[in-house]
Image (cartoon, rainbow, N blue to C red):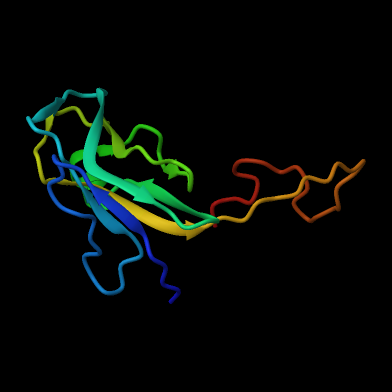
Amino acid sequence: MTQITLKIQKLPHCFELPQYQTQGAAAMDLYAANQVDILLKPLERALIPTGIKIELPENYEAQVRPRSGLAIKSGISLSNCVGTIDEDYRGEVCVGLINLSNENFTVHRGDRIAQMLIAPVVKAKLEVVEELSTTQRQEGGFGSTGIK
């Protein structure tokens, strides 16, 4: 396992610093740092503060992902599916939540609302070509390989 140093600034309204919940966890949980409860009605979105700022090492990103338990049990996901925090961003980490259920959901201060994975970034050099190589699949799109 590769280990890097993630510089983190704790803002005054921070509830808790991100944490890995188990030794084998790939991502650390992010905590809601809202001062008052936030009610999310069905299909509503809200930007939830975490109370932290981060400084990523060069050539790294932070991916903000939904928590599977919240998604399955309560229908709470991220409004942008997976969020990317670029290495040069220095603002507060906030999480865009969406309520995909038919029930109201309340975000309380200190709730674990998302997870953050730190990952290396590889940048592509674009090469314009006249033709691409052939494959067995070719242009077969969605569902082209079947279910079984």
